[in-house]
Length: 369
Image 1 (cartoon, one colour):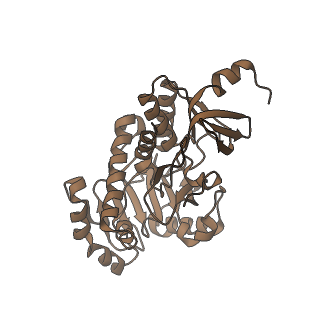
Image 2 (cartoon, helix red, strand yellow):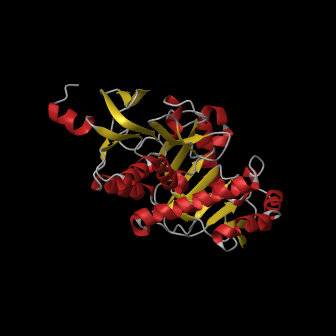
Image 3 (cartoon, one colour):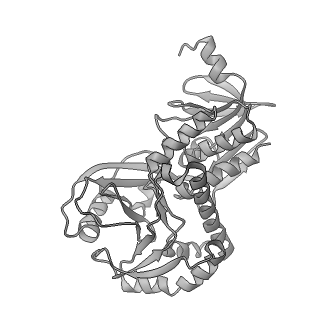
């Protein structure tokens, strides 16, 4: 590429901070840095036309864990660790709302509902409901989980739901657009379709090699979540999430956010359509990929559950399918740390990017002196 003097001077010279990834973490990190260092030159690099991971491809759940998810987490985490996870997710959601405003992200709190495939599983969860409510009481000051009847008439599930009284939903597209607008308004430069291939840290700066050109930055922040292992040697594996959405359905009465199978399936009403995603647990190995795409085994199961459980007496058509790439690991806690003198990272959001992305971006910025 033949760059002019003006292009090199304005976009690629004397850069104080470079952030890789223009998703929730990357842009929140950039905004916090700009707040701390108003005169700094802050550059955000994005390999896609839009954020490529999960920031613009998620289901828009403003959630922090269903009851069965939290019970499951207690098998591999201590109570204090689980408490901290939920606390961070809740703080992150409040930060997102405060930073962007409920109206601009279309935040609505219609509660979350967990559907159980059997009476035994429902009773297994309910047996631990009070214990989990006590554990989370210091965060929410009220009981988080309760029970309700099957008011939406879903089929092939237990006829009572486990209700999360604090769960909400957002419009993912509006959130991303507002975040991009706010970053640009604050003088942060964002360049799309530029892929960071590698970097080398020198004594006082970092040398970045991209698919477009090479340049130098004083500090480098990696915020690529599910794609982190392309640049870093950290415990982060990509995890693909497949999603579909129906055409508009007349008189669709479903309201709220819904979870099935320990949160591995999830659906909601958006614009009188059912958005339905998940199924990674059907084929973990195949879905441990950073390649976008859909598979027959998961798409067929999504359609089957739609037809038999969610919309059993309703005609519907699938209008669109897509996938997003999350970052997961053997622990749910995000990795936010300084890697060397001039390199930092905020990755492995564990499928909770909407909840913790703003907080991880803020914490990442706070690491930098």
